[in-house]
Structure formats: structure tokens, C-alpha cells
Amino acid sequence: MTKFTFLAATFAALAAAPALAGDPAAGEAEFKKCKACHSIIAPDGTEIQKGGKTGPNLYGVVGRRVASDPDFRYGDGILAAGATGASWDEASIAAYVADPAAWLKQVSGDESAKSKMSFKLTSGGADVAAYLASVGG
Image (cartoon, rainbow, N blue to C red; front, top):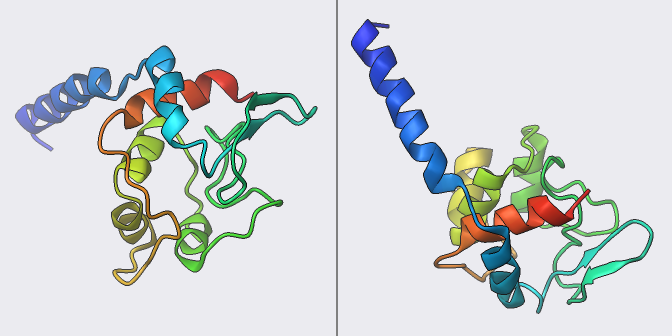
């Protein structure tokens, strides 16, 4: 790798970092769109966000392996992504909520991968990810 390529890659990574930094307070407000399907419930039963059960509980999702909540029945597409060893971080959550099917295709390497999550969060994904990181463990 040339010195220029290394510097360009380093600069690009540093420039992208602030774009991924989300606002947890804004994410809490944005999470209202997610509550129809998801809840955030701590292991001791404390309801941080009461919500639906169509999607998995999102408590502690940041840092957790993809498709690893034992109390949820996942679809084949996300199970394939989880089988790669992928784990959720703020960037992957933001990308997933923006376009779940596209993210699954990219991570699993399967162009036919489908997502059971049909909702797309057109903006605010980084904020929701920051909020989830702030409340989950």
C-alpha cells in the first residue's frame, strides 16, 4: 500500500466517523417508529420501552451477535447473516434499519436474502443506534 493510499484511507475513515455518531436523545424520539414491533426490556423485566413482539427485544443489541436472541424466531435471511459471525454495532444497526434486505444481502453474501423487517427508517438510523447503545447493558 502506498503512503498516499494509506493516508487517503485513514482520512476517509476519520471523516466518516462523525457521520456515524448518533444522538441518543434524538434516537429515543425516533424509536417511537420502532415500538410497533420492538420493545426494550432489561433482563430483570424493567420495561425501558414497551412495544410489540413482532421483532426481537432490543435490550443489549449493540455488541450482540446478529440473530442471537434465544426468545425470538428469526427469518432465514438474518439467520444467514448471523451465521457469518456478524455482531451488531452502531454502524451496522444504522445500515440495517435504512434497508434491511440490502444489509442482509451484503452481510450474508446471498443476493436472494430476504428480511422479515419490511420497515425502512429513511433517516435517524444513527440516532436510534446511539440510543440502543445507551440503554442496553
